[in-house]
Length: 331
Image 1: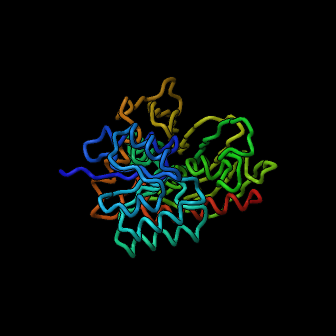
Image 2: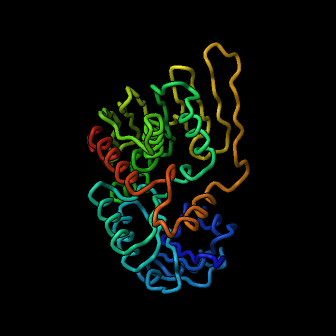
């Protein structure tokens, strides 16, 4: 199999994690780096032994030998560069959120369809076997009928109005940065429980704390899905609430102590049980991001990866849900 030649567009912290996964993969190589400065691209390229370093994003897209682009710029630039990548005929793995809003998400998906490219929103946990495990357990009725979901991804960072997390111009705020994780998890779980790949909330109520810079520092959402399923979600960049995922049903509950970095086990508690049934991690010690890389390679022909990865329809529903949540807290 000829290895895919990856171009990394945006050379920050998350790009390094994906580049390490590519470098260790069976299907791809880090082939080019594109940064806003040539020095930044050269440093990144040297670290991963990539033969090409480009001093602009446009220059990377003009490289005819690049097969797939990993888009890792700040959130507000995703739409523009995703559309430009599609127009250049590059397959695309775009860091979450795919875009900042519903309208731009529609434009990116339309561009992917028009230019016949692969497109995947990079929620890495959706590609991991641990997620496939708890999805299967819910589908098989391990907790009976699913009725409640509780999930959070919230941490506390020192307030810095210039940082990406708190800067409105850079797409800061907890909902866009990490709130998308519990939202996508709840939509996946509710869909699984009702016989679909994902579900959309019937109602959504939200509250949050808005920083002096105009972004949400932390926020909560209460959602109701078809099937009388209620979800309690939290996301934040200035409040430590950890990572959680709990699924409550008529015949027990399922707990995933590390749902997004996928390092733990899955625990099934039955009513009256003194100990849970433990389902071991299906891929202990495997690079979390490697599953994204391999998924891209194996589904290029279909132009999108299958659920529980983010299909195009799923990404569009995700954009709608996040836009409603942000609106509910006053953004």
